[in-house]
Image 1 (cartoon, one colour):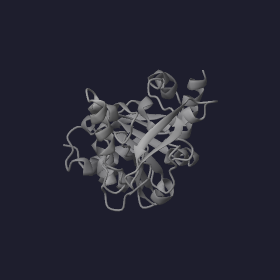
Image 2 (tube, helix red, strand yellow; image 1 turned 45 degrees about the vertical axis):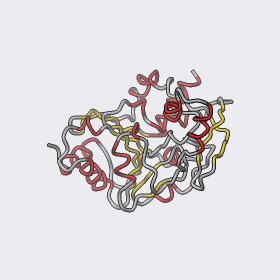
Image 3 (spheres, rainbow, N blue to C red; image 1 turned 90 degrees about the vertical axis):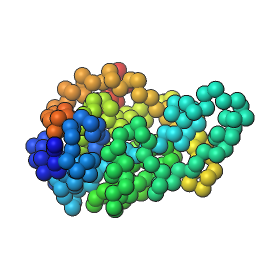
Length: 254
Protein backbone atom coordinates (compact mmCIF):
# COMPACT_ATOMS: atom_id res chain seq x y z
CA UNK A 1 0.00 0.00 0.00
CA UNK A 2 1.27 3.44 -0.93
CA UNK A 3 0.13 6.34 1.24
CA UNK A 4 0.04 10.09 0.80
CA UNK A 5 3.32 10.61 2.70
CA UNK A 6 5.21 8.22 0.42
CA UNK A 7 3.65 9.84 -2.67
CA UNK A 8 4.64 13.26 -1.36
CA UNK A 9 8.26 12.17 -0.98
CA UNK A 10 8.19 10.67 -4.46
CA UNK A 11 6.82 13.85 -6.01
CA UNK A 12 9.54 15.95 -4.37
CA UNK A 13 12.24 13.52 -5.54
CA UNK A 14 10.80 13.66 -9.05
CA UNK A 15 11.21 17.44 -8.99
CA UNK A 16 7.71 18.83 -8.46
CA UNK A 17 8.16 22.25 -6.87
CA UNK A 18 6.23 24.32 -4.36
CA UNK A 19 4.35 27.18 -6.01
CA UNK A 20 4.30 25.86 -9.56
CA UNK A 21 1.26 25.36 -11.77
CA UNK A 22 1.09 21.68 -12.66
CA UNK A 23 -1.09 19.87 -15.19
CA UNK A 24 -1.52 16.26 -14.05
CA UNK A 25 -2.59 13.32 -16.20
CA UNK A 26 -2.55 9.97 -14.50
CA UNK A 27 -3.29 6.30 -14.64
CA UNK A 28 -4.13 5.58 -11.02
CA UNK A 29 -3.79 1.86 -11.61
CA UNK A 30 -0.14 2.32 -12.56
CA UNK A 31 0.72 3.70 -9.12
CA UNK A 32 -0.13 0.49 -7.31
CA UNK A 33 -2.57 0.11 -4.44
CA UNK A 34 -3.17 3.45 -2.75
CA UNK A 35 -3.78 3.73 0.98
CA UNK A 36 -6.67 6.18 1.00
CA UNK A 37 -7.58 5.75 -2.66
CA UNK A 38 -7.21 8.50 -5.28
CA UNK A 39 -7.54 11.14 -2.57
CA UNK A 40 -4.07 10.10 -1.36
CA UNK A 41 -2.59 11.35 -4.63
CA UNK A 42 -4.60 14.58 -4.40
CA UNK A 43 -3.42 15.13 -0.82
CA UNK A 44 0.21 14.54 -1.78
CA UNK A 45 0.09 16.87 -4.79
CA UNK A 46 -1.52 19.70 -2.81
CA UNK A 47 1.03 19.28 -0.02
CA UNK A 48 3.96 19.55 -2.43
CA UNK A 49 2.52 22.43 -4.49
CA UNK A 50 1.63 24.33 -1.32
CA UNK A 51 -0.72 27.27 -0.93
CA UNK A 52 1.01 29.19 -3.72
CA UNK A 53 0.78 26.35 -6.25
CA UNK A 54 -2.00 25.29 -8.62
CA UNK A 55 -3.11 21.80 -9.59
CA UNK A 56 -4.75 21.42 -13.02
CA UNK A 57 -6.54 18.49 -14.66
CA UNK A 58 -8.33 17.95 -17.97
CA UNK A 59 -12.08 17.39 -17.45
CA UNK A 60 -13.23 17.08 -21.05
CA UNK A 61 -16.68 15.90 -22.10
CA UNK A 62 -16.33 14.72 -25.73
CA UNK A 63 -19.67 12.93 -25.39
CA UNK A 64 -21.24 16.41 -25.67
CA UNK A 65 -20.68 16.50 -29.41
CA UNK A 66 -22.13 15.54 -32.76
CA UNK A 67 -18.73 14.64 -34.22
CA UNK A 68 -16.68 12.61 -31.70
CA UNK A 69 -16.50 8.82 -31.81
CA UNK A 70 -17.77 8.61 -28.23
CA UNK A 71 -20.82 10.70 -29.06
CA UNK A 72 -21.63 8.87 -32.29
CA UNK A 73 -21.24 5.32 -30.92
CA UNK A 74 -24.70 5.19 -29.23
CA UNK A 75 -26.40 6.16 -32.51
CA UNK A 76 -25.05 3.22 -34.52
CA UNK A 77 -27.97 1.24 -35.93
CA UNK A 78 -30.55 3.91 -35.12
CA UNK A 79 -33.08 5.12 -37.66
CA UNK A 80 -32.96 8.77 -38.71
CA UNK A 81 -35.91 9.52 -36.45
CA UNK A 82 -34.25 7.81 -33.50
CA UNK A 83 -31.07 9.79 -34.13
CA UNK A 84 -32.96 13.07 -34.18
CA UNK A 85 -34.61 12.16 -30.88
CA UNK A 86 -31.26 11.12 -29.42
CA UNK A 87 -29.64 14.47 -30.25
CA UNK A 88 -32.74 16.43 -29.23
CA UNK A 89 -32.66 14.93 -25.72
CA UNK A 90 -28.89 15.20 -25.24
CA UNK A 91 -28.38 16.65 -21.70
CA UNK A 92 -26.75 20.09 -21.60
CA UNK A 93 -23.25 20.66 -20.31
CA UNK A 94 -23.22 22.00 -16.77
CA UNK A 95 -19.72 22.89 -15.50
CA UNK A 96 -20.83 22.28 -11.91
CA UNK A 97 -22.40 18.85 -12.37
CA UNK A 98 -21.44 17.24 -15.69
CA UNK A 99 -18.89 14.52 -14.90
CA UNK A 100 -15.54 14.19 -16.61
CA UNK A 101 -15.52 11.71 -19.48
CA UNK A 102 -14.73 8.19 -18.32
CA UNK A 103 -11.92 7.95 -20.92
CA UNK A 104 -9.81 10.49 -19.02
CA UNK A 105 -9.32 8.49 -15.85
CA UNK A 106 -10.80 8.86 -12.39
CA UNK A 107 -8.30 11.32 -10.95
CA UNK A 108 -9.59 14.21 -13.05
CA UNK A 109 -13.02 13.66 -11.56
CA UNK A 110 -11.56 13.53 -8.04
CA UNK A 111 -10.03 16.97 -8.56
CA UNK A 112 -13.17 18.38 -10.19
CA UNK A 113 -15.22 17.36 -7.14
CA UNK A 114 -12.70 18.62 -4.56
CA UNK A 115 -13.80 21.57 -2.39
CA UNK A 116 -12.64 24.83 -3.95
CA UNK A 117 -12.10 23.45 -7.45
CA UNK A 118 -13.11 25.66 -10.37
CA UNK A 119 -13.77 24.55 -13.93
CA UNK A 120 -13.54 26.28 -17.29
CA UNK A 121 -16.80 26.70 -19.19
CA UNK A 122 -15.96 24.93 -22.46
CA UNK A 123 -18.71 22.33 -23.09
CA UNK A 124 -16.28 19.87 -24.72
CA UNK A 125 -12.72 20.50 -23.47
CA UNK A 126 -12.93 21.94 -19.95
CA UNK A 127 -10.17 22.02 -17.32
CA UNK A 128 -10.51 22.04 -13.54
CA UNK A 129 -8.03 23.58 -11.14
CA UNK A 130 -7.29 23.97 -7.44
CA UNK A 131 -5.02 26.59 -5.95
CA UNK A 132 -3.77 30.15 -6.22
CA UNK A 133 -4.10 30.60 -10.00
CA UNK A 134 -7.13 28.35 -10.52
CA UNK A 135 -9.59 31.14 -11.34
CA UNK A 136 -7.12 32.95 -13.58
CA UNK A 137 -6.42 29.73 -15.48
CA UNK A 138 -10.03 28.72 -16.06
CA UNK A 139 -12.03 31.97 -16.23
CA UNK A 140 -12.01 32.40 -20.03
CA UNK A 141 -12.27 29.50 -22.48
CA UNK A 142 -13.71 30.44 -25.91
CA UNK A 143 -15.71 27.88 -27.88
CA UNK A 144 -13.40 28.02 -30.89
CA UNK A 145 -10.25 27.49 -28.80
CA UNK A 146 -10.69 23.95 -27.46
CA UNK A 147 -6.97 23.53 -26.68
CA UNK A 148 -5.58 26.65 -28.33
CA UNK A 149 -3.88 29.82 -27.17
CA UNK A 150 -7.14 31.22 -25.77
CA UNK A 151 -7.69 28.12 -23.62
CA UNK A 152 -6.15 27.11 -20.29
CA UNK A 153 -3.50 25.28 -22.33
CA UNK A 154 -2.35 28.60 -23.78
CA UNK A 155 -1.91 29.98 -20.27
CA UNK A 156 -0.01 26.90 -19.13
CA UNK A 157 2.42 27.45 -21.98
CA UNK A 158 2.75 31.19 -21.38
CA UNK A 159 3.39 30.63 -17.66
CA UNK A 160 6.09 28.00 -18.34
CA UNK A 161 4.00 25.52 -16.40
CA UNK A 162 4.80 21.83 -16.37
CA UNK A 163 2.83 18.67 -16.99
CA UNK A 164 3.20 15.55 -14.86
CA UNK A 165 2.26 12.33 -16.63
CA UNK A 166 1.89 9.45 -14.18
CA UNK A 167 1.94 6.05 -15.88
CA UNK A 168 0.99 7.79 -19.14
CA UNK A 169 3.13 8.05 -22.32
CA UNK A 170 4.71 11.46 -22.81
CA UNK A 171 3.00 11.96 -26.17
CA UNK A 172 -0.41 11.73 -24.46
CA UNK A 173 0.00 15.17 -22.87
CA UNK A 174 -3.16 17.11 -23.74
CA UNK A 175 -1.23 20.38 -23.93
CA UNK A 176 0.60 19.19 -27.05
CA UNK A 177 -2.56 19.81 -29.06
CA UNK A 178 -1.75 23.51 -28.88
CA UNK A 179 0.82 22.85 -31.61
CA UNK A 180 -2.02 22.08 -34.03
CA UNK A 181 -3.23 25.68 -33.70
CA UNK A 182 0.25 27.00 -34.51
CA UNK A 183 0.38 25.41 -37.95
CA UNK A 184 -0.14 27.54 -41.06
CA UNK A 185 -3.72 27.12 -42.29
CA UNK A 186 -4.68 24.30 -39.90
CA UNK A 187 -7.64 22.15 -41.03
CA UNK A 188 -10.96 23.33 -39.66
CA UNK A 189 -14.10 21.44 -38.61
CA UNK A 190 -17.67 22.26 -37.67
CA UNK A 191 -18.37 21.21 -34.09
CA UNK A 192 -21.75 20.95 -32.38
CA UNK A 193 -22.63 20.71 -28.69
CA UNK A 194 -25.33 21.45 -26.12
CA UNK A 195 -24.77 24.60 -24.08
CA UNK A 196 -25.75 25.04 -20.41
CA UNK A 197 -29.03 26.66 -21.50
CA UNK A 198 -30.03 23.43 -23.28
CA UNK A 199 -29.65 24.81 -26.80
CA UNK A 200 -27.47 23.29 -29.50
CA UNK A 201 -24.80 25.45 -31.10
CA UNK A 202 -22.38 24.95 -33.98
CA UNK A 203 -19.00 26.60 -34.43
CA UNK A 204 -15.86 26.35 -36.55
CA UNK A 205 -12.59 25.40 -34.88
CA UNK A 206 -9.32 23.58 -35.59
CA UNK A 207 -9.81 19.90 -36.43
CA UNK A 208 -8.00 18.17 -33.56
CA UNK A 209 -6.41 14.77 -34.19
CA UNK A 210 -4.49 12.28 -32.06
CA UNK A 211 -2.87 9.98 -34.59
CA UNK A 212 0.24 12.09 -35.25
CA UNK A 213 1.35 12.32 -31.62
CA UNK A 214 2.86 8.84 -31.00
CA UNK A 215 5.46 9.63 -33.68
CA UNK A 216 6.77 12.47 -31.51
CA UNK A 217 7.81 10.16 -28.68
CA UNK A 218 11.53 10.07 -29.48
CA UNK A 219 11.85 13.84 -29.89
CA UNK A 220 9.90 14.50 -26.70
CA UNK A 221 11.97 12.05 -24.67
CA UNK A 222 15.18 13.73 -25.89
CA UNK A 223 14.18 17.16 -24.53
CA UNK A 224 16.89 18.35 -22.09
CA UNK A 225 14.23 19.73 -19.75
CA UNK A 226 12.26 16.48 -19.52
CA UNK A 227 12.47 14.73 -16.14
CA UNK A 228 11.73 11.02 -15.81
CA UNK A 229 11.41 8.88 -12.72
CA UNK A 230 9.15 6.67 -10.62
CA UNK A 231 6.21 7.51 -8.42
CA UNK A 232 4.96 4.50 -6.54
CA UNK A 233 5.00 1.76 -9.17
CA UNK A 234 4.42 4.19 -12.07
CA UNK A 235 6.90 5.54 -14.59
CA UNK A 236 6.49 9.32 -14.86
CA UNK A 237 7.38 12.24 -17.10
CA UNK A 238 7.65 15.82 -15.85
CA UNK A 239 7.53 18.05 -18.93
CA UNK A 240 7.82 21.79 -19.50
CA UNK A 241 4.65 22.57 -21.47
CA UNK A 242 6.27 25.26 -23.64
CA UNK A 243 9.17 22.95 -24.55
CA UNK A 244 6.80 20.10 -25.37
CA UNK A 245 4.62 22.29 -27.58
CA UNK A 246 7.72 23.54 -29.41
CA UNK A 247 8.77 19.96 -30.15
CA UNK A 248 5.25 19.08 -31.31
CA UNK A 249 5.17 22.19 -33.52
CA UNK A 250 8.44 21.23 -35.23
CA UNK A 251 7.23 17.67 -35.69
CA UNK A 252 3.99 18.75 -37.35
CA UNK A 253 5.84 21.15 -39.64
CA UNK A 254 8.40 18.45 -40.48
